[in-house]
Structures are given as structure tokens and as C-alpha cells.
Image (cartoon, rainbow, N blue to C red):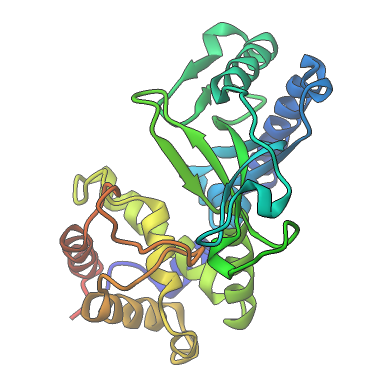
Length: 295
């Protein structure tokens, strides 16, 4: 047994007050940059966090913040089969998505400086300093999925985001708010053990990564989704985190399959476009079991 129960319990805690302050500073600076840019005169938008910080599953090494700047006055839709813009009383827009993205880039450079801002494939990266943490900013548009719930009402839809990659201009559709809400619900129903366990496994994954025992395809997001697929009753089968962790790893190795889903429930976890696959995942979990000296 590599880690004591006390060590595992120490890892369930959220960020320190100092690190939390740096995260909040980052969010505030990004909001200020957009407000000062004058974008509010052109768009109705919403700024919100996504990723491990928003999901409250972040650990010290992963204290970066992911921010969505989502336009709501212009949006993309996925309609019920056979229906179109006219059925929902919408009209098409000729606005190019890259126009908004470039305006956001300009605003962030004005606030943080050109040396601190770089353009990634899926987001705009802001480098950290002593005052704020690293940030990945995603300029995006609201995505209204009517088809998923069979809605014929323009006001009833599953809300997601849509943006386009810098390389190849490929579309990406995600559902960060659904992910957050589903995580909150599961955390409450498991008496908060869901997110505690995610933090523990992320911490162990980070240590394994430092020792070269895992590969970059195994992400913190994947770990969160794996734990999400565990039946809720399993979280109450042990009175210790040592026991819960061991049972969880054995369960996932034996039960993980292609029907498992992401936390949002909107996509299968093992899709062809994901950087991980089922075999990589099983290999990683077996290595974690060996790393922890479980018999």
C-alpha cells in the first residue's frame, strides 16, 4: 500500500486560499478585458468557467482555469428531424465566427500583453504570473440542441457551445453547463465522495506522470468521466478512501466499455476523435493498481 489513509484524505481538499485568489483574479481580469473592449455593444454574451475548476475537481498541479466567452445573440441550432429555422421562427446570419474570435484575441492582448497571449488550436492561452493563473479562453457561440429532447419550442433546448479550431477550422460542440450540473447532482447523491475520489485519482495520476508511468493521452477529464460512470451505491461500500479507491479501480478495469459516457451524458466516452481509447485506459488503470501496490 503506497499511500496512507491520511494522505488520501489530504488530497480531497480543494485549492488553497492563495491559489483560489489567483484563479478569481484571472476570471476578473478576463471579464474586465471583454467589458472594456466594447464587445457588449455588438453581442449579447456570457462569460463562465468550465473544466476542472468549474466542476470543483481541480488539484494543486491543475489549477489552470478554462473560460468560455459565449455569444448568445448569435447561436447555432440542432433541430428535430424535419424541422428548420422557420419552424422555430429564426433567421440565418452571415456573421463569421472568426470575427468574434479575433475581437476577443485583441481584447485579451490589450489587457494581458502580447507576450502573455498565444493562440492554440481550440483556445486562447494566457500565461500565468504571481497574480493570476494560466487560462484557456474559448470564444464560442451558444449551441441550442432541440433534437436531443425532441423540442419544438424555441425556448426549450439543451444548451451547449460551438466553436471552430484554429487548425482546419473544424467544428467542436460541447456541453459544459450540462457537465457541471450532472457533476453537482452526482456529488450530492454520493455525499460528496464523487469529487473527492476524482481529486484523489487525479493526484495519483499526476505523480505517475512525473515518474513516466503514464502517457499524455490519459487526461484529468478522462478520469473524471470514468469515476462518473461508477454506480452510486459503490461510493457507500467502504468507510475509507483506501477501500473506495481500491474497489473503484477494480470495478473500472473489469467493467469499462464502449457504452460508457462523458459526464454530460451527451457523448460516448470512447469516440474516435478522442485522444484516448479503451485499451490505453485499461492499461493505465492496471498500472495505477500496480503503482498503489494493491494485491
